[in-house]
Image (cartoon, rainbow, N blue to C red; front, side, top):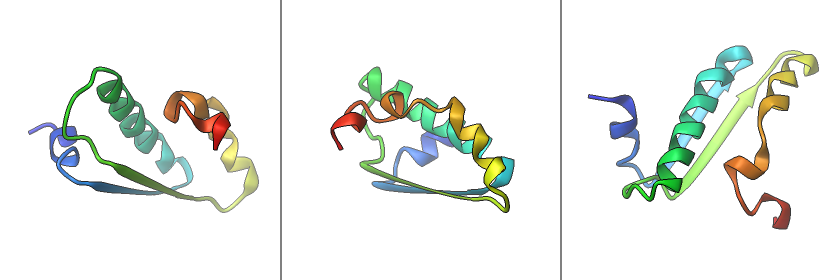
Length: 77
């Protein structure tokens, strides 16, 4: 069974990662976004992402994330 199939059955999805462990979580978020744009049903209604790092420079991976892509109303929030 595809991991995304099992993730899609939950109303709330909590993703927790540390350091470079954010990379697979970003892939999950991007996949959910694609599914949302394709109007696939049964997606989580709420997603919470927790990411911990030891040093601030480890946050640089987040520079590759476009908040507007992940949340189309980001600018309005």
